[in-house]
Image (cartoon, rainbow, N blue to C red; front, side, top):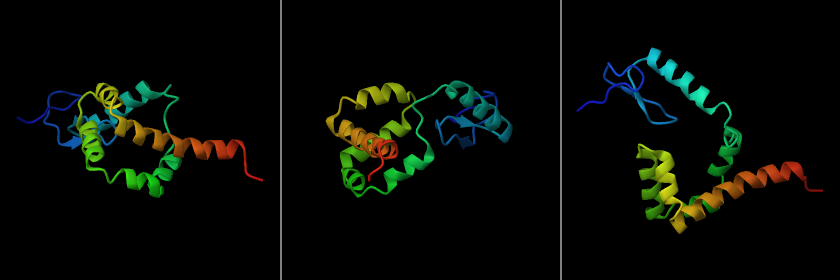
Length: 120
């Protein structure tokens, strides 16, 4: 069974939103969907800027943690989950996932702290 568009619910969804993974059918519905996302997340103070996210890809320590196949399975399942908030709450009970999340946060926070208290 083919999925219908998350915006118009009429047409068959051919594309997937890279941000939330919901499916839509056309450029028009994509534009409307992006507008809805912006309205929902305007006040989201927890958003991490792309520049800081790029730091994660440079971390050898994080790359080592990501070699764990169980963690890989958890991340894939989280990415594919319909209700990401609920899945995230579930995975935050897994010590391995918590270690991964802490490592990510420490890398992003370290950059921020470095900017607040520059080394002399």
